[in-house]
Length: 111
Length: 115
Image (tube, rainbow over all chains, first blue to last red; front, top):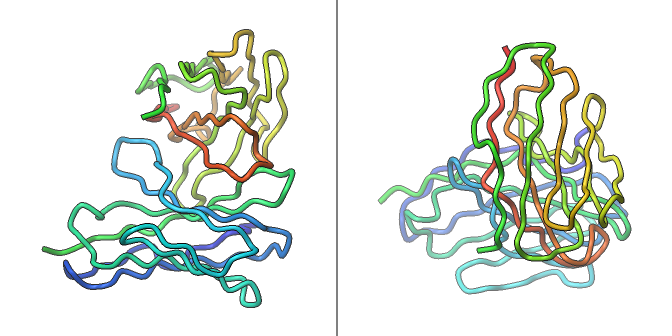
């Protein structure tokens, strides 16, 4: 059963606007969350992370928000750029356990 | 970029044949992982290694075996390939293990097709 879910397989956004990618999880023991970005024919690359003691982490144009009560996290990209077009995976882990990945959301930023 | 290579990058094989995929790292990281990526499933952990000759199973380990005789190499073997093992396989590394608060670095992937 999928413990980390990304319910939107795809998302299209105009250049310069905000992209919001969502991720839900079911395991309340998860305490560390990451976002990865993946271009075609390449491996995923780390983007940003957040631990459960925080509700927000920011790195340049990328901000991750964590709502523990709702078991929900989101990645905001502002402003979106064409180079952001990729598949984004969220991942979660509990201390002493493996990472569980979502199914990915394909983001297209339209110039 | 982390120094991770995978070989081969593409492979087509027939059902019932053995297949070995290789992951090579130049970062001297202790932990190495094998994942498979399939539509509708994201990335799923097959096996991981926490040191030379030390390995453990992930969530989808059936039909796969691994070996790690050197820090830099982690081999994934399909003893008798099946069509359900058609997938893209990624190797990953990190230096503090799955329970640590740090990310994994991924290789470029191997696309395996089992006919």
